[in-house]
Amino acid sequence: MGWDERWGKSSGTVFGGRPTVLGHRGLGRGPGENTRETLRQAVEVGLRWVETDVRRTADDQLVVGHFPTWPDGSFVAQLSLAQARELGACTLAEYVGDLPAGIGVNLDVKSCLEDALRPAGATTAGLLAPAAEDLASRRPVLATSFDPAALLGLRAGAPGVSLGLLTWVGFPLRKAVPAAVHLGVDVLVAHWTSFGPNEVDRAPVHAPPKESIAVAHEAGLEVVVWCPDVERARELLQDGADAVVVDDVPRVLPALRGLAD
Image (cartoon, rainbow, N blue to C red; front, side, top):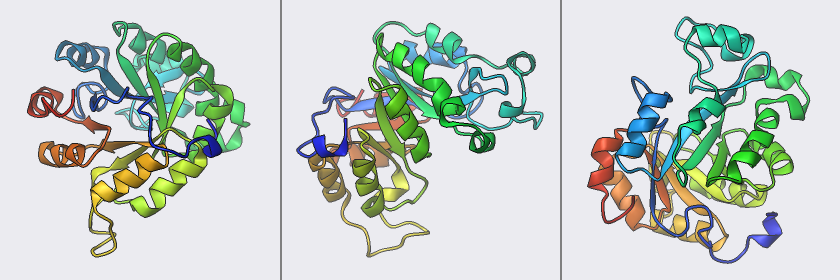
């Protein structure tokens, strides 16, 4: 959907108008993150959506993993899939293959340095596009990235996939909201520190969170908050946030009952 079609109130098309909890890296950040076991546990505790990170190997295979390196310091993008498997890699196809029907997946597209040396279709986003399009034909999918070029590539290569702009810690909403709107994405995914004064962007330059979220909705965006604690998640959901990406899912999910699930 282009930016010129987006004006008007958010229709809630990604999360269906139902405040949503997404499990960060499956069940939450920490030991076992982005593994099939913690994914299974996330589903068992009742999550309807999970977030996971997608990277490419040197031989153009898509694997799940947050960090650009494996524990031994080797870079994901510099290893073949066979080499990555020796270090415990799981492919994206294997990971999502374990999901029951109806569970939504937020694919966080992790560009790598070497993507700069490739044509757009051979970058991480370019390789993901057909897989994401296929996955979106079978379950809810949201593809997000800190890399705007990755989102433009996905828009071209996977037009049926909802897209979200990720912004970094403390990045001001007064810049993030218009950026997301004019990129033509569906969702803004902002860190919880962006919703008020922080160490980088101090008071009094912030609009109240409810006002910023309302402007985003009026412009057609849904708003996701990443990694708030329970209290901040509760406050921002009450201010109108559409979803939260959280750690420590077994503790946070029950604490937000009645506000989001």
